[in-house]
Length: 337
Ligand SMILES: NC(=O)c1ccc[n+]([C@@H]2O[C@H](COP(=O)([O-])OP(=O)(O)OC[C@H]3O[C@@H](n4cnc5c(N)ncnc54)[C@H](OP(=O)(O)O)[C@@H]3O)[C@@H](O)[C@H]2O)c1
Image (cartoon, rainbow, N blue to C red; front, side, top):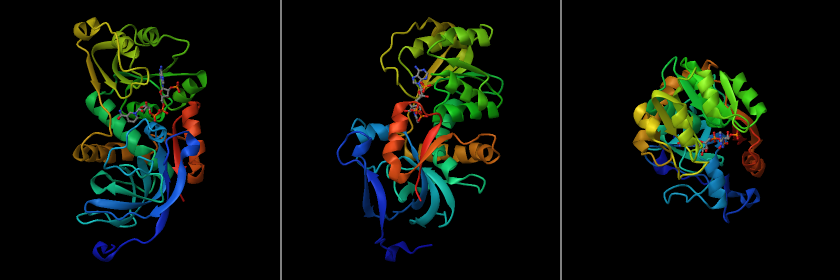
């Protein structure tokens, strides 16, 4: 282990920042000092970094970076522990992935030790870089807050997204029945290959009718919703008695008009959350749930990688262009070697 009291890292590293908000070309690869982990932090030598939609908002200047966050882009990484701060039991050389408070698109990143997920050998770095955000979001919302149970029906909107791909497989691994929406027949076919029982092309089919048909009029027990807007009213119509809907994004709008009668008559629950503002303690708790309940499924290939496309760090602008195009399935990951 490095003696941090007598160690100051004089090395520099590549780091992607956006000094002036704009399009993908506005991102620059700078040379910056390698950061030094403080107490209860670790320095990770990044092998791969996940690309997420908030990175695009940050690049455009529409997502205010929290004042204590690293302005380098990137919210999740996988790699090896390089050095640790005081009070950390992890050891240099351990393979790990983690959410980071900014700073993921770089050769080295700082993570909170409590949020680090130690990786078994069976899970490669590209797969692992796409795990923290999706696995923690799905575990928190689908498994914990919406409390999906074996044999229940779940409707997952955006089934071919990174979150959707993982959620389909997580739900199937626990023995649930899975219906999804996706925006093309190709995306529906992809969802089927990873386990979806019912796929609904939302551009040509009304999901409320399709769910009624698939569940013989009963509705789904759980909805994982990343659309919001007018989907809320339709989710309520598609839900079974005592159904739970977890809202994780509002791509379709944040203001709604909804008929709340099913909420009362069928005792429905609507919950919402977003990962980033959760306390460190809560993120640490969810990371431990992922280590305990999800890693073994990924290691055993019961949940396959949700990575659709990989780019080298130098092609970060192309990675953002692809995510913005909406044609991709699964997650996009930057290879940082
Ligand atoms: N709350 C949280 O803690 C949390 C954490 C992580 C991510 N998120 C959010 O979760 C969403 C998914 O993230 P991601 O990175 O996995 O994927 P993403 O690349 O942001 O994908 C967005 C997905 O939304 C789907 N979508 C958009 N409009 C739709 C509609 N009207 N009906 C059905 N699906 C629709 C798209 O489906 P098509 O391409 O098929 O049109 C696409 O699959 C994002 O909005 C992200 O911001 C939330």
